[in-house]
Structures are given as C-alpha cells and as structure tokens.
Image 1 (cartoon, rainbow, N blue to C red):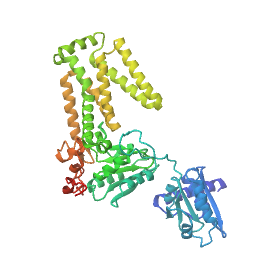
Image 2: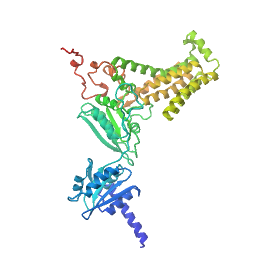
Image 3: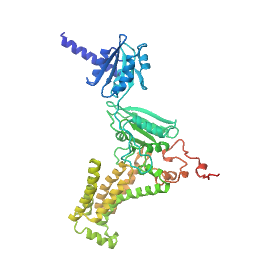
Image 4: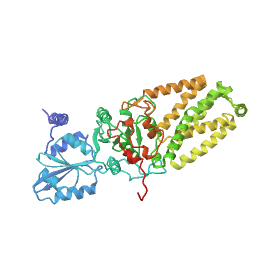
Length: 515
C-alpha cells in the first residue's frame, strides 16, 4: 500500500468518525491536534477559525474561536489574562471559576461546540480533560436604540426595536416587569440557526394560543430564517390570502399593550420587528397613539381610518362603474363638468383609471427605493408634473386625478404598512370588474371579499372578530376607544385567563382631593 493510499484512507476514516460524532452527539476528542482537525473538517477548512494554546504548568489549554465574531479586547481581558495568571487546579471546573464572563456553559459535544462557535462563542478546554467551557463573548454589530421610522407617532414613546434580540427582550421586560412574563427560546434553521423567543404573560394568555404558536414554531423545517416577517409567513393559517394574519411591529410599547391584552409576541434574532398574534383585521387599523390621546380624539381618528380605507377601495371603481354604465345616478350639474373633463380623453374610464393607478404605484415604489430626501422630492414633483401633463395631453381627466389622489391618501392612513399594501392591490381587480359589469361587478367583488374574510383565521381564531362572531364588549377596543373606566375587562376575543383589568367599582368612582 502506497503512502498516498494510506493517507486517503486515514482521511476518510477521520471524516466518518467525525460525522458519527455529529449524528450521535458523541463527545469530541480532547486531544488538541485531533480536535483541531475535527473542527477544520466541520467548518470546511475556514481560514478565520483560530485555535490558540496556552501552556500552564506544562499543561496545554486550547482556545477555539472565529476571529471576526468575538470581541478581541474582551477576550484578552476576561479569558486570556485570567488563564495566564491562573494558579489553581487546571481542569474545566477551575477554568470556569477563573473566567470573568457571565454566560458560561459546560459541554463535551462536538455538535454543541460548532453550533456555538459560529455564533461568536469561545470554546476553552484542557488537553485530556472530560469537558470544555463555552464562553459567550460574541461581538454582534447592532445599532443603538433609535426612533421608529416605519411607525411614526406624535404621542407616546418613540423608541424602536433593534437587530439584537437581547436588547429587544430588555425593552419588553422594562415595560412589563411582571414575574409572570414567560420567555421560551427556540433555535430554528438547519444551516443558519436563528434564536426565536416566544413571549407571553402566563396568567393572561390563553394556553391554546401559546400551544399553537409553540407547535408551529417547532414544526418548521427550513435551512434559515432571515427575518421575523419570513417567520410570520411560515406560521400563518392561510398562505394564499393577500391579508396579513400577524401584526409585525417595531414598537416595544405596542408589544406591551398586546401582552397585557392576552396576545403573544415573537422575537427573532437579527430582526428589528416583533410578531404579535393572534391578530384580527381590526387590529391592523389600531395605533398606539389612539391610547395616548383622549378617548374622543382616538375614536375620531379610528373612524377617519375606516372611512378612508372604504373610500380607498371603492371610490375609483365607483367612478369607473358610473361613467361606464350608470350615468343616471350622476346629478345633472356634475354631469356637465364630467363631460367637459372627459371630452378630450380617448380612453375608456377603466383603462384611464388603471393607467393612473399604475403611475401612482410606480411613483410610490420609486420614492421608497430612493434615498429619503431624493425620494420625497421625486414623489411630490413627479406626481404634480405627471398629473398635470396627463390632463393637458388628454390621457386623463381632472376629476379622476382628484379621485386617485384621495384613494392613495386613504390607503396611507392605515398604521400597518402590510394592510395598506393589501388595500392598494385590491383596487385593481375591483376596477376591472367595475369596467366590465358596473355596479354588479363591484357588489360581486365586495361579497367575494366579505366571504373570504369570514373564512380567514389567525391561530384558529376568526379574523373578523369582534364583528364576526359579534362581541359587543370588544367594540370598545377595536372600532371605538372609550374612556378608561369602561375598559375594566380585557378583550374577550383573545380569551384571556385573567379577564379583569380595573375593579368595576373603582373604575367608575371619582373622588375629589378632600374626600
């Protein structure tokens, strides 16, 4: 047997041995050289893997880590220097007591070692010892706490989540300092493992909702989860509907309010948004600003949003249907101005409306992708220039420009970006049906949309609650915003265990200073 053949067989034998250790969870070799070979095989000979050795009283201690993932200065001060000054018994217990790091874990599994190394953990072990120590000193580049950008508010806290799951959990715990706040951690992904945390208040959140969330998370088999919005799509009830079934938010105070109402929150590492569920259609039109304002102001703003969304969906299709089939419903004074406005337009109303809607969506998408200052300028100037030029060129009428602008503004009033996008998309098929069948086509789309919403569920709960099934007591949390003395119970739709918020007698009691 030649030396080359012998070397190849030894390499194959070592690879099979390492693969067996991975599959069966066997302990790794505590010989430094063999351990280094195992690691190099498992990480595909990655050049940023570092194996550093320190000799203490003639005994070698190995430190393994990825140089780009750890805090170098922190490792020098908290690991290397204490080890070099160590004078006690050299074993994994002595090493654990010497290192000045809060998060330390004992392990002898090669699988655990590799999974932790790629997340910025340092592995320390002594030649010939039975266990090693995992020390978490990951240098995860995260931005500082900043003002929320996608969910702007006038009143209330402005702080938003970051890409650090530890900071995000800290923000939630700071707002909900309840010992009943439970946090369950899951690792999802076969290649890139992501930490996912399930958060709920134990004596408020219904156990069925918690179990459903837990089961859907554990059933996920995927190579990687990039963001919480991707996870929300994987665990939702219906993947084919255009309507979002979970609220994704970057506001910690919205998560706080949801937890206290009996909902459940999901955090994903390296994602600046949280998932809230179960979420109904009405929740997407609620803003935390409604709570911070006086009850009559909050109710007024919610009414504006509902009316604006209704106009956004039906105003343009109604224009198309009336001008195509139903001239008799137009007042005579308005009919003259409509005729004059459309006298130079060569296209039918349906094509005219679709063209303008497409231009509006084009401007919105282009403005969102450009830098902030350039995007705002382009959106304003582009809308004015294109609108005016379209009217002068005879492509469209002045009245349709006004209607399209009102429809676009109505879709922007939704606090949730996802539901606003869904509303904008819904307009296109309704406009087509209005151009083909007039008012009958609009009613057909409306009925189809209503039936579809009645069939949607979120974590098995009705999507249209509290409208269907009708729960009168929950209207004060969804459609209206009543004074706080009427909010003595939590929303019934969430099926909270502890339903009481304010004692009923004290809720309606008002005292003067001298009483």
